[in-house]
Length: 315
Image (cartoon, rainbow, N blue to C red; front, top):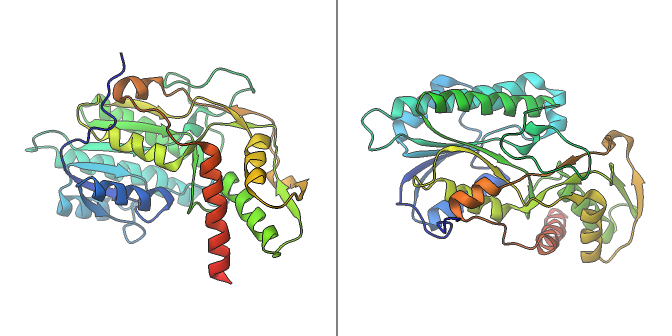
């Protein structure tokens, strides 16, 4: 029987958040502060690939929990600079994990580390395949995937040695404020530009037959807050809707929220083979009672409205 702890906040604690200036980080910091937690936020001013710098920051702050979000999260950017991606994504995770171990002696309980990875570590499957659960083998494909998989496995090494590590594997999530390096936000920006007359009525897309698992970013934040609760056992947790959505369906939801009907053109640089990536979050649901609560159509409307606002403000 699923626990019903999602809406129960754990005791107020000191939480360090890396990558706090990013799309997810800014929203997470606000949610943590609203819940009464004391937040120590860091972003680009902290070189997470530098163990000495991370150690100094965390030993100074003495957090009781760490949410490690800092990452280079664009697959395309990871292909362009694999070395930097390894430094940030893998060495950053190593620095946080090793320092958290130093913080544990003398503490009431070990420092809980939410090591935020990615559902992309599973690779992909054929459309219609069963969703990936946490026992699925890791089959990374890009430098981004490889670095996240390596960090995840290192988290497993620390967990086996007694550290309190949550290896979190979120699938696609979106919402207002997201960079257009990601598919939903890219579609939304293009539509907003067409509406404002800033580009021809042509929308560039990749493979619209591929299938992904999408969540509202606030549903993902619900999961992260639930996993900070020390009553939830440490382990590996997917954060996913369990529902596959073809890129074509995602685009149709955005078109329904827009006042334009552009021509659709395939951009060769965006095209990939048809595949699917859908997650099974049963373990998270059983441990915390978490389940997605936001309607994706509403999320995409808010994303489109956000791009309309951003583009007008930039005019």
